Length: 220
Length: 197
Image 1: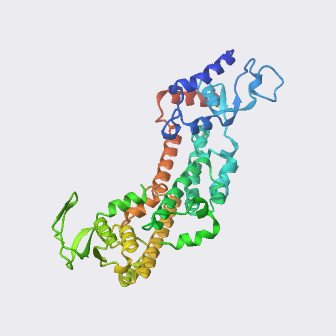
Image 2: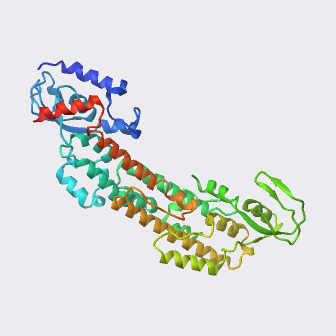
Image 3: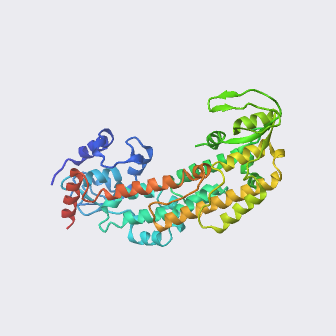
């Protein structure tokens, strides 16, 4: 099958952003202009090419050939993978990135709190939602759900703790946002409690200083 | 919501004061209050009481529940019970903070009361956190929390509802691949699977 792939890919690149219709990915935080969503769709996923693609060798950095052979595995960005996959017949088959594979799923199911999602996958949940449909056994969805539920404890801890650097470290990007929201509420409650008749509050820098913490907790 | 907004809502609670001045009825948006007779107790909204107190024009009569013994009982019960007990007042934190903040000399044992109320708050908050964690762990889809006050609900608002939202969103997104999908992509996935086999 001969397809003019170079122009196809260029078209896809443009179409993907101009015609939202093409993006079959929906609901709230994957808004069309959402930066997070754009970042998530540029994450690379391993794909296996199902056809010979002439002149597309540049997609595979290790290939010496000008043409891309069928059956070779290349990591390509998610937006490209989705588009190539949704053609009829599909040009690629999308494989799961390694954190969604069986071995990592076992770790996550055993104890999700022990995993540093910030290192393994900044956008673990968002990317997971996209690749879940390429999982034949469809266990990824359950893992995502389970992981989120287990890691909720870490959110609680991060929102309460004043040692924000250490508790925030292993959280994924979206978890960090939530934890920051929660600790903001906590902090505004504390300032409300502290405000007496004189609305003077300690500077943020001073409040975060270790020695002051005890005093802060003891105020009603 | 900011704690200040809840404070604003809570300030509409009626409490008793003994004014030390005489004045006719006053007409406010929230109702008419008075007439004020020096030495005779009268009911006014909390914000008015605090304002008069700051001008040294009245004594605040602490609410019935603001008493060491009553609060100790509440605290004990709160410790004993697995569930949340009913608080004497929907805005107990706001009321305690305002009255103890500006009219502490009118309340007997103000420092003790302060400590006990903060204890009760801490017990309730830790209870709330453990039950939220339990709810998420067991995979429950809903929880029932009776007798929570507005301030307490507010303090967990960015956590629990947001977490539930996220879970739902992930379920919706991942479920989409199932047959309920719109026409286009279901044919995609069919052709995809036929390719694989």
